[in-house]
Image (cartoon, rainbow, N blue to C red):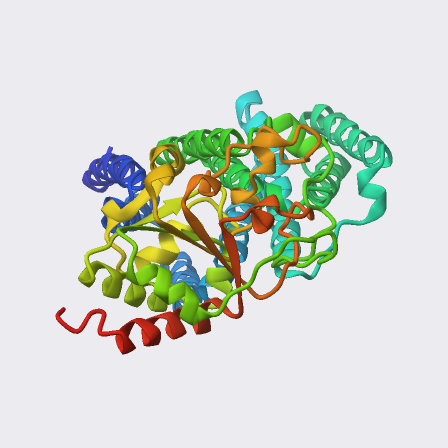
Length: 471
C-alpha cells in the first residue's frame, strides 16, 4: 500500500465523520446551514480521497475535471436562480440525478468490467440498476407533477395500475435472476427498462397531498442506490454515505407519514389523496354558505390589540414570495408588544421542511418556529391566527368529520384560537380537493388577495396607527 493510498483512506475517514456531523446538524433549523456546509466539504474530501486511491492517468484526470466543472457550474446556477416555489421540484430533480449517477456507474461496470465479477458484485449491480432507475424516473415523474406538467391519469386510480406495476416488477425480477448468466446482454436492458417504467408507474398515481412523503422516500432510494454502487466499485465511503442517506430518508418518510396519519403502503398503493386537485390549489368554490370576508384594515385593527399572534405559513406564502413581508409584519407586532410565533405543520408546502427553509430565508428567529405538537396546546390562548396559503393542514374536519378524506390526519388546531384570518386568493380547495370547514367558523374571516400584497397592506395600516415607530 502506497503513501497515497494511506492518505486517501484517512481522507475517507474524515469525510465519513464530517458527513455524519452534517446529517446530525440537519435535524435542527438552527444548525442546518452550517451542517449543509459540512456535508458539502465531506463530499469534496470524498472525491479527493477516491482520486488519490485510484491514481488515474492524465486523460482520466482531465475528464474528471471537466465533469466537475460542468456539474459545479450547473449546480451554482440552479442554487442561485431557482425560486423558493420551485424548490420541491428541484429537490426531486436532485434525487433523480443521484439515482441516475448510481445507475450509470453500475451500467458501466456491467458493460465494460463485469468479467470475473463475483456474485456479490453482480447482485450489487442489479440492486444499483433497479433502485437507481426507479429513483430517476420516479423523481422526474414527481417533478413533472409538482411543476404541473403531468396530471394523474384516470387509469392510474383503478386496479389496472396494480396489474401494470406487478407485471413490471415481475419482469425486473426475472431479469435480475438472469443477469449473472449474461451480464452484458438482454437481461441487463430488460432490468433497466422494467425498472424505469416501474418508477413512473408507482409515482404517477400518487396525489399532490402525498408529495412530501414521495420526495423523502425518493431521497432514501437515492441513498440505497449509492450504497449499492459503492459495493459495485468497492468504495467503503460510498457504501457508508449511501447507507446514511438511505436511513435518514426512511426516518424522514416515517415522520411525514405520521404527520399525515397515512401509512407508507397507503401512500404508494392506495388511492391518490388530492390527485384531482391542480398544482398550487384550486378546486370548486361552491358549497360554502357562511363565508365572512374582511379588509386588510379590519385585520390590522385586530392585530393592533392582540397580545399573542400565530402565523400559519403554507404553499400560498411561497407562491407569493411573501416571506420577507411576513417578517416585516412580525417585527412591527413585536415592537407593539405582541408575542409572535409561527406554526409549522410537518407536511406544509410541497416538500419536507419547505416552510422552515422559506422562513429561514427571511431570517425568522429559529425559536419562533414551533412544531405542531408544541403549538397546538397554545392556540386556545392565542388572540389572532393568520393563515397564509395553508389549507388542508388547518382543516378541522380532520378531527371532527369521520367521512372526510382527511379524517385522522393531525392538523394545526387553529379553530381553537379567538380569531382567525385566512389569507387566500380564493375559496379554492387545497391538494386534497375538499372544502375547508375552517372558512365557515364564526371566528374566521377571509382576507382575499395575494399574500404578499395583503401583508404589505397590513404593515402600512399598522404604521399609519403608529405601530412600530418606537422600534
